[in-house]
Image (cartoon, rainbow, N blue to C red; front, side, top):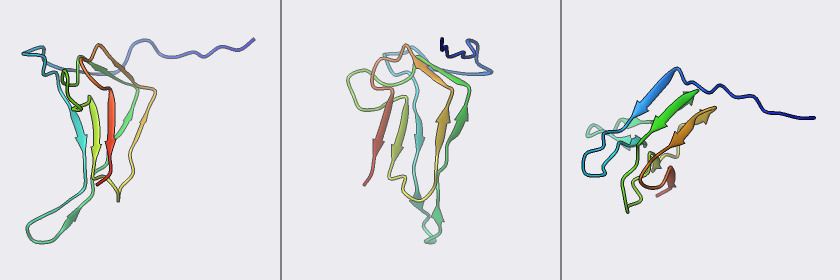
Length: 93
């Protein structure tokens, strides 16, 4: 017999606003400053609840990775629920 046991309550809860179906977004990306200094984005989340995030009828997901090539990110043991759009969107450009 096998079973998976998960923690049902999360230590951190990110809750989006319910104004005009906007919710919230977590965006990770790399970019270059005006002085040519390279900035590397990184998102590391463990045991986080993401509630009511993402935007209705768009690709603006609750968690987005856009032009994120240099760093590393990790999302584990987390729950994304009750969003109005896409949960995760990864775009390499």
